Image 1 (tube, one colour):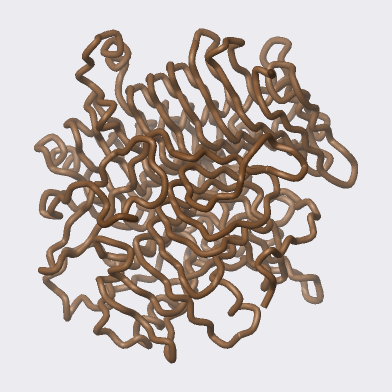
Image 2 (tube, helix red, strand yellow; image 1 turned 180 degrees about the vertical axis):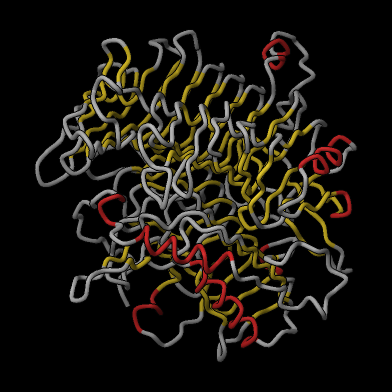
Length: 635
């Protein structure tokens, strides 16, 4: 067994584009195969009183033979393990009960676009004796070449609301930990793990290799080996210990978190004792009478540890009968009619090509996706928008830009929100019932040509952005190029009192994040600047070279952020510069804590960390360079 304090050799990775030889051909071949295959619910005949959640939602119950469950989950993984740009979407759901035994464990891996979740009210209601894991993905190589196995592109999957009693399979290295070697858009929520360490890297498959994740929330975990994870955020959880850092590790309200401090060569931890405001993601569950519901957790202030550490999570249940259950291919008008009539919306796994936006019209409505349900706007439409209503919950949805440019992919609130902000008693938002975006992801290009001026626009006040990844694709099977997958800004925040916990935005052609609202807060930010700018003239504004990753409007008076990272790899023109990674107004009320900049593999230079202070992270032959700044303004 490898020691739990394992620290891998720190050889810097080649960025993703340099490590994907043959991936495009493989993905295209698999896409055709996946789209031609359908998976029927494993127990549809026996449990036909269950709701119709589509052919790609597989519901297991503990009466089923373990071998039957094992065969089905292995079948899905085989289809999805290399389907990075495919159309397959799957939800694997476990009803309350115990699955597997010490003698006959249930062990399986989770591939692309696959959600694995328990259907209990608490994580302990579903117990897996075995393991649920993600390993390094091995890309094709020429005969006789070294293996090309990595975790840098292990995106778009999730694990939630269950407990795992780890049981090994007698296979040596694999018995040393439950592996969750993921990168962006692969959350772990409401998971309890016993019996082994949790490893966020795979050191068994031609490894260790770097991973570029990730996000954990509301989980009760053993010792965690972060290892080669370049950056990570853990929120409102409990850990028995944590080892390793590379660039940026953030803990917010985590019992047992390592001690944070100013970034140095020996400490890249940022630790907040409590999360100022949080709301856990809504989830499906089946009650003791076999009835299906969606549980919506309450928002809580200044919290730490799991939401269920003293009992059940505080919140309310909504009967599934109060949801319109949508299937891919449905006309969006039916979804909007249901929302206008006061129903909530559940998107079953699949691709939704909508010519008009899904429109949320009433306070407190829930829009929940299963199996990374994906909205692809058509004809330049917005994918989803909300009116000026408070307490909306949007969760578990991916937005994939269409070929005709959309002004945005998700817009929360309208300009009326700003008028409402002037009132002493605003009616359009609520500090105690904030609108919440949980596990909402954006892609522009990669699987097909995509264009969107902005990915996420938040006009509303009192909003929590709890884990988002806005990604202008740097690789894929189609639709990648400076003039092909065009996208100016990843996230624009116009509303006041917006909090982001786990903000990822990469490769946009202008500012990756623009923050115009007052009293904003960000806990963890990860960014890569665009790889593919064809010249410095194409990527600059005025005399400022490039665009900052994170831009706070010059008029903002109050803003605070912790654990911010921006990296540069301009592989088309390695001599490009960005003047600053972060640009903020120079005011006492604007504060940034623990920032890091990185130049990758002798391609691109970030001159300064923030406002001409700190840095540079300069292109250097044969490796990567870093620079960091503990506080801005500096003491």
